[in-house]
Amino acid sequence: MNRLKELREKQSLTLDDIELKTGIKRATFSRYENGKSEPNIATLIKLADYFDISVDYLIGHKKTSNHGTGQTFG
Image (cartoon, rainbow, N blue to C red; front, side):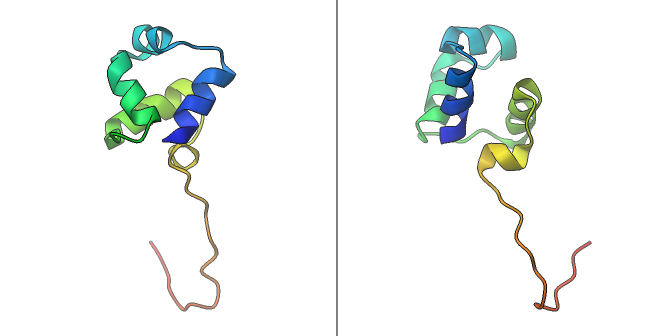
């Protein structure tokens, strides 16, 4: 989750700030930043809401076109 560190630093937030504002322990958030652990879906949503970004952005997902594959979704 390298985007977490990028987002935190861009807003000049410390790990203590994150803990106070989100309730996510600083050690846990640090593990997310360093790829030693991954947040569950509820935590991803909480973080996306906090940073005002999409979960897709947070996890590094980029929408790809499925044109020509014959697949339909939904």
